[in-house]
Image (cartoon, rainbow, N blue to C red; front, side):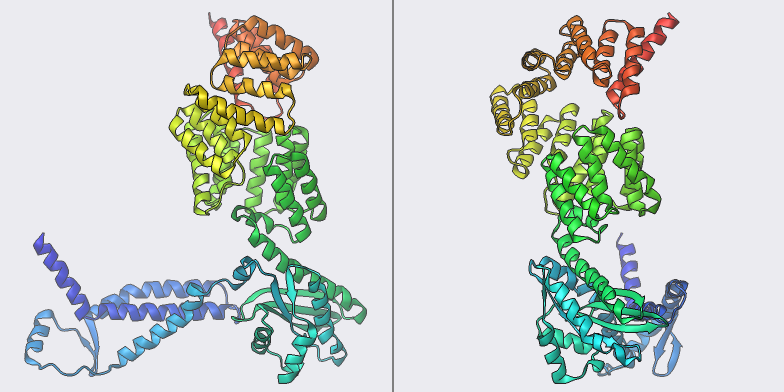
Amino acid sequence: MSESRNKLIKFWQELKRRRVFGVVTTYAATAYIIIEVTNNLVGPLNLPAWIAKLVILLLGAGLPVVVILSWIFDFTSQGIKKTESLEEFEKVETQVKPVKRKLRLSYVLNAVLIIAVIVLAYPKIFKRDTLEKLRSSGERISVAVMPFLNMTNDTTWNVWLEGIQDLLVTFLSNTPEIKVRQTESTNNLIKDFTNYASITPDFASKISQKLDARIFIYGSIKQAGTRIRVNAQLIDSETEEVFKSFQIEGPSREEKIFEIIDSLSAEVNNFLLLSKLINEAPVNLQNMLTTTSSPEAYRYFIAGKNAFEKRDYPTARNNLLQAISIDSTFYYASSLLAWAYFNQGFIKDAKEWCLKLYRKRDMMSIQQKILTNFIYAYYFETPFEAIKYLRQLEELDNHSPSTYYHLGIAYNELFQYDKAIPEYEKALEIYDKWDTKPWWVFNYTFLGLAYHEAGYFKKEKKLYKKAEKDFPDDPDVFYRHAVLTLTEGDTVSANDYIEKYLSVLKNNSYPEAQIMADLGEIYFEADIPEKAEKYYRKALFLEPENPFRMNYLAWCLIEKELNINEGLDLINKALELNPDDHYSLDTKGWGLYKQGKYKEALIVLGKSWNLRPFYNHEVFLHLEAAKKAVAGQKNN
């Protein structure tokens, strides 16, 4: 062990003696500078993109050669010489007196290289995104508009140097989120130092800083044949970094200049406004908002999303429809609208919006196309296809909580709770990293359901405590907590959560029959069937002609085997009122199955399967059980 360690120490010392580290450092610094220079020249010189890749490959291939040469040879004042062996070096070292160390050319060269690397790397490593900073400052974005430059060689356009500037200032001043320096202030400062024709970005930057504006707009008018082109750039006043470039073209006739200026003003205004609004949105929504160029559509989308979070789906739909009417290409507004219809039970409308998106998928980005395929699979295929597309989304971006949340839902629907749990947990981990809460409560309650079904009651309880902090007074948290405490036999806590749950429902004017049915659901999930039956009967008593109330009670009597015959009588009455309800048909088919009437069960369950609006794994399992039972009878 000590011998190998000594060898390693000697090798390390030999590397230092032969100056291998210094050579490698110098080579790396030089290579970095060459790469940066190459990258900066490829665009302006219109060089092919493979030039930069070739330079990187050649420099990478040269590194081992340099290491080997630095080991064998040394640069001395007498020229390049072979490096003497350690024994020869030690002999010479004992004979030569130490001398004062002189400044060597290599030291100067290394210092220059280090400075060059720092200059090139500093902006990339340390420079903050100034636009991001001004977006998140909470202040109005301050802008100075410079007079435009006439690059047409036609003096008749000189009148528009201040004309475009003035119209831009007027347009942007109408937006409360933008603070525009007035034309008079800007131009008085400019005239004190130079004329308009001499304005450079550097000079404009100084003027903008004097005006205390974070951004300045610098532009020009150019002419190509019968077309006029107005260019503009949004530039950071301190760093002169170009945030965004705009280019509007039109006929080179003065009467058309107003249309060009209006278009330019709208694009600049929307970019600044959207930049600020998007940055103020939650992290998980920011990429969604970049798919619209309309601040008005964005505001309707946010209003719709906020209503969606509160399960106010009618309001959500109205706002989302408004967003889409303003910007028909707003992808995320259309997809959220489909979910709003779905969550309110309007499956036909949800599918129609899904199909509208699906028909446009070839015009979408890769991510949007996969998302559309996922939504289509959810409505028209099975969770297995949905999982396939969600995994594709995960490959594109493994930091999207929405992807993992929907994976959890897909596994929950397949009753694969052990697979659902890690997906829901990943979603919550991402929200924790973002230091924000999930955008709605179901990230907690759906994971809680998976914990419950898998028997992880301690984890479930801990989860609900966190959910109560993020979503205080949310009825779904009280509901799930009530189920958990009843399952654990803690009736005192259960009654407390039930009271809290009922209080929210009553405050929201829920019908008494619905409240009784929800109480039945709590006890049903907690596997206390006698109590569940009691509340289902109360709900039916309050609404005796409601087929859905009949179905809930019938399902409890059949599934928990309390009274299968009564359950079948009830469900037959429900089907007389609503003969094509696939849920009621499934209840009847399952009741027949439990009575051993497998052929009749298969026919009814088959009808339920064919009428279902989307995949239902429970109905699938019931149908498969009936098929197997019928096949078994034939074999016997």
